[in-house]
Image (cartoon, rainbow, N blue to C red; front, side):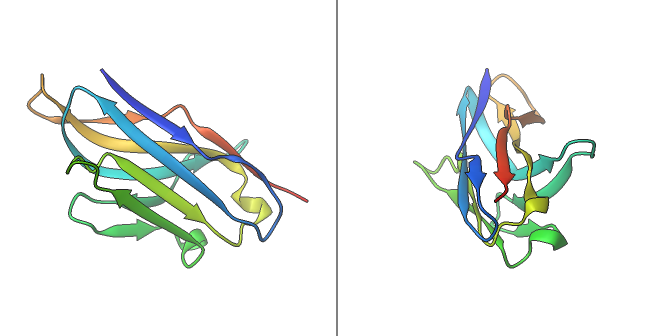
Length: 124
């Protein structure tokens, strides 16, 4: 009923940039916060950045000043987020996952949904 489709990952050299996007679609009544998480090999999934429905942003300390999250207001749906990643470092290498709190038309509450993940590799 809900799909979160990510795109924009790839291989980039240290110091380079990438832009990730995530679009939510389906029988969506309302979307709350959306965000990005990442998981490196052998490590737990960690928060990268979030964007609340009221416009508040939050970043992990490790990416502050380098990564920037934004949210597109398509037909007032606010259903697409972006992650602009600059000055990338090898330690940013991970699978990046989109996350969203979504209320369906068929539900009275919000649930958490995840995208399939997109690989980001920073290497020379």
